[in-house]
Image 1: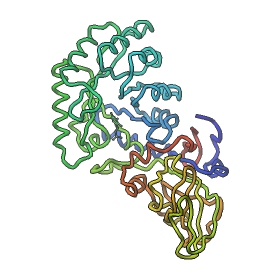
Image 2: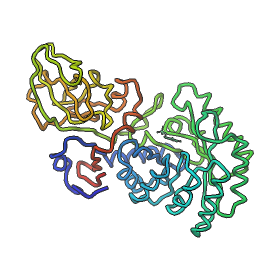
Image 3: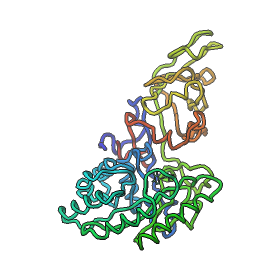
Image 4: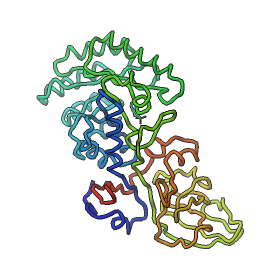
Length: 387
Ligand SMILES: *Cc1c(COP(=O)(O)O)cnc(C)c1O
């Protein structure tokens, strides 16, 4: 995070930027409020992995803490350490795989690990005792049928027993992840819940169980348990088959047109000359490319907003730039704003629309946004944080 431009307006701070991401902190706080209400009694664990789904974890983490979010989760330990360094003080859980040698780092930063072997639990206990922080909580993940990371219920029980013998650790939670939370048919979610309950029965009581992602938090009160892990909903995007409880888009992705030029009929643009003008055309050059996470598969498929109009991408997307046909938009000039995700002149392009054009999901479009793009956290257009 830097302080450059903090206190100035977006309009001022972006004058000399080729491309950037605007993060609406009021929308983010509003989404946190909506999900907090939706979760009822359950604790909300904000999932800020993958640079907060591309939004900038160093901006999003502190803003969510200020908005009252109780806990955070990421997938890998370095993400958790970065979140602490950005100023997050509340509990942070690592959901993915870590190594016994990570224990001391995690304990030093008060980061909660998901442990998967007795040796790992022993390393956490040793680190906790050495740091004078014993007992530290650990979480155990049950593989309830998705068959990715996790342990079978009997393995959960024996690991929990081992953790309880150790002086330096306690089992704070048993948790799982759902395979079909965004499917119309919920029968597999119910089956997975039964496996969690079986694991808890074998392991003995634990303070917390958690399972629900955004889709389940919204759709299934009975599976919210003690805590819910909401990711995509905080960013104002939704999984499939999930009703909108009143969330708002947090991210706008924009660029400043770097060049506007004429292309004569028959001439081509960009690598491979895959698009050729059929008429006298005006083309705008947008300084974002696949290195920024703007997928090359959008070549000749996607749209961007220029002059409040939806304009087609023409030719291939390069590593750092691409072209848009603006023949039908009068007066487009160098320096004008192009909106790749967001709203302009009453038209909106969502991450879901971008995803739909290239046969993927909104999660991938957002999480894939590269760190080269500056993130500007703002309220009502006044910059509050930058990353
Ligand atoms: C990403 C993730 C979540 C959040 O899922 P959303 O659908 O974005 O709410 C929850 N739990 C785990 C284990 C995850 O990896």
